[in-house]
Image (cartoon, rainbow, N blue to C red; front, side, top):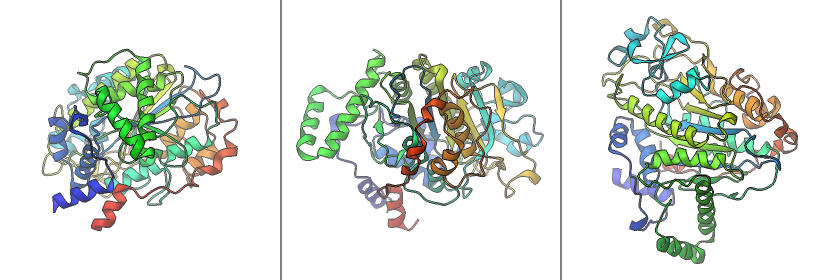
Length: 474
């Protein structure tokens, strides 16, 4: 049965057969695979789908924001990192000041002495995040605790879609909030690598009428020239759409390579993804917005405290963040990185030394444009009487408020456009204040209103997950 389901899922995503010489040189690591085994069936399906598509943790899609004629390193940059699996925010930014923490967390409680210092005695930082910690103390990173998407049903599929659609509850829309954002940004001169390429399906976050470019530093980043030429010739004759997509992807690779002469193939695809994102965002004619997906936060068992699966996943993220900051130095002062997950974990530990799907969690921000050094949000407490459904950290901040705050103060998006187009039906969700040092791009929105109605006009194709659900009744 499992084999038949996997075969049907493989067919659903329309992945072309890849010659042996083009298969991934950087398969999913044993640690990643082992940690994935600790997740629920839903998250294993999501990870398996990405493995089938030739994607490790490193796929990202770059949204190409049309740049103004005078745009250069002064343009604001935005990187959105979706942390898939449901990250345990309680053990990321650890509430040592909460008297219920150690009692509730038991074997996976992290001792205060094992956390990294923040600018508060109430919270400590997981030791797996030393680079983020240094940014925090330097005023270039912050955290927003007790956040969550509008939907609280604890389903990976539904809550990830909710995070990416930017809609209230189970409402559906054919577009993602980032694509709707692009639809209202003022148009400028085209960029060199403008186009669209998809490895597998495009993430909902980017889906919509505005063109985006996808890129992945995995199986096709540096193929032998003979193979590249052969595949290009074949596609040009047999499949013009895929050929055009391939050419767009090759342009993205070329753009990324221009920014740095580094060609170290010993570097993992995960690190190369963050490095490539930095190169592309730093390029004069490159994108101004990028999206990355990082999996492996579904810690149902063997979560650990000062080590274990959560620690390993966080440390991998931290390494990637440092890689990004190192390679984005020329634009770092104008950059905001937002890291968000679909939901948190249960406050209490389960019988497998892990945590189950919860609600409230933490969002992380980093970058030279971040008004850092702060843990923001209203902490609800971990006492049993304060929990949501006697189980979860009660969310006190809508994740859309975090995104709105960044888009308003960093990209200069007006409140009316945020409330009606980017995040429809969200007038009651105010942008969170104080996340960014100041508006770096208010002039970019001078022509935005004229395009505000275009965001939801184009229907999207049925996604692989929807096909899977329809096939198996889930």
